[in-house]
Length: 303
Ligand code: GRG
Image (cartoon, rainbow, N blue to C red; front, side):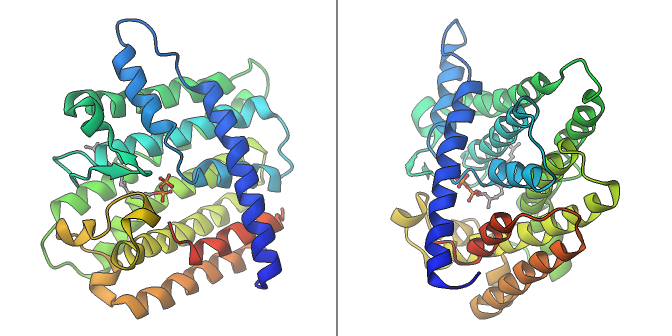
């Protein structure tokens, strides 16, 4: 799983899946018509700017791991989670928050559409995500699973998840914090959405109840590792490679894994967490080799 040949093959598989996810997302985006077309255009502008599409990919692969086949169930949720993620990026870049001008290699929504419209586009994407996910209800026995997936989609990005973490992150900027507080921030602002993606994939495929707790733990470790890598790249990468400004954390006096533990320890912990996540797959009923390779590839991601 670690040799170069597999890595190249995995990279190609990731590219192929991301391209298919682009097509799925495109089918769920709103038409830019009517008096509200400016906000619709701002939503689509950031949704269409690319991005790795990691969350829908993790959702789909977890779904497949449990033999999920019904595309009408999974695809609305795949589009929905990318909408929620994209809303969080639009709001995170606003002048009142990180005040960043570039994202996904493009000018940010508030630079192109103005601050008011960017706020509305973020709000609209969050709401439209639930409108989109609700399309998975089919009026049959599967609706019980869909309702359970919907509960996860409403909770993990909220005050007991992403918004909760973001609140502490913003409020504690410039202050010295301990590791437990940083872990609260990272677990919630970033890992919660990764957990959300994987849990929904498992639930919609009918995974056994005991597996869900393990999936949540995998998502938590992967999410933390993912945020540590984000902190590392903000320090070591370039704007061209990342498609967003580097040094944003320092500019905003952010507490990061790197600022507390240093680069070397951050790298060690990030790899350890990924390894622990992969090991947890041994406790699951389902298996998906590509999913494990995808998670491993995140340890050396460059953007
Ligand atoms: C409601 C005012 C208001 C703000 C909310 C919740 C929130 C803003 C922001 C969430 C926090 C956040 C942006 C965390 C960062 C998570 C992270 C590492 C994002 C980058 O994800 P990638 O690398 O991005 O998957 P792409 O562009 O590839 O999709």
